[in-house]
Amino acid sequence: MSKWTIFDYVDPAEGNLFREWSARLQKKELAKLNQRLDSLAIHGPGLIPGILSPTGMPSIFKLKIHGKVQLRPMLCEGPGRDEESFTLLLGAKEVSDDYDPIGAPLIASRLRECLIKDMRRRVFHERVS
Amino acid sequence: MSELVDKLRSEFQDEEYRHSYAEECLNTMIATQIKVLREQREMTQSTLAKKAEMLQPRLSVMENADYSSWSVSTLKRLARAFDLAITVKFEEFSEVVLDFEEMSKETLSRLSFKDDPMFRSAKVKTHRAFRRRRYSESDRQTAEGLQMNIPFMGQVVELPHPVSRNNAEYSQNLVREDSNESCVGIAG
Image 1 (cartoon, chains in turn green, orange):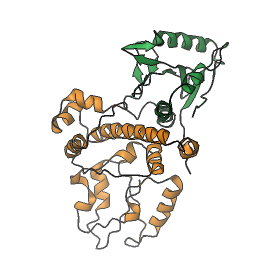
Image 2 (spheres, rainbow over the protein chains, first blue to last red):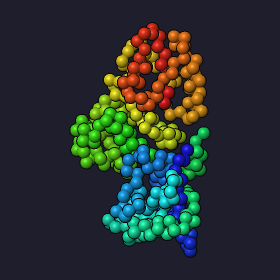
Image 3 (cartoon, chains in turn green, red):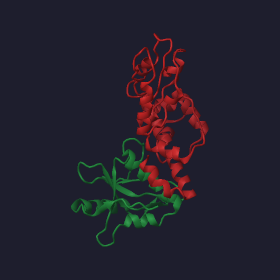
Image 4 (spheres, each protein chain N blue to C red):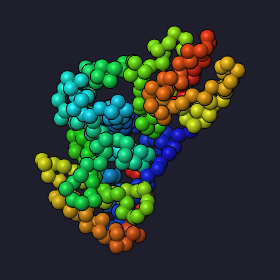
């Protein structure tokens, strides 16, 4: 089934923060998030139009998940070479035309750079349900 | 059976979760099919928007996985622009998940009326068992096995996939004018 591998960024001190962010979501939000992640894992970026939205930060994308709470998880492709994968870098929301946390794409970009320097800073996506 | 169904079996025990997940599948599949159908017909967004009597920016928004404000009347206009019929039906969750999992350009493509083999020749009979369905691989193999048993002029009839070749060639292969009892299966 899954063609693309999804990873979570892991902070050396604080662990898998994306999983912790996901665990705080309501069931409805979590269902939408998991559906988007399943879409990416099964179909990759090529089939579903608009599944990845640009953030203005190079190599950093967001998933746009609508609802009462506007989820905007930040992710990047790879970043390993020759692998069909995505890494979830940061859980984020959009509130009043701003990100929570503020500057989420920039934070995500820095996390990606950290990951490129040390590819051990990721684990297979830990699904919360 | 399906890795995705296996993964969702416990998650779907929660009513709110399964409905939200299925709604997202619906949004994803509609947006994707509109794009696939448009590209199948080699139409630009502007061309399709004009045929559907809407503005291109609106079509662009609808051709996006995060669009969710669908109305049946808008979908009817798009169906007409594609020269396709539209069906709206209630479905079991398992079907929705399987459709979503097996979604591809091939499974979402559809022939316009002018290329629909059923209406191109009275001699074509389409077996219900071979209608375009969401087969699992094992179902597909079973279907292909059944297909082998269908006599057609003493030969095994190998049918092209609906979109593996262009529409004209596909229809041409389905409509066998030289036969009095064409047996046609549409696998895919």
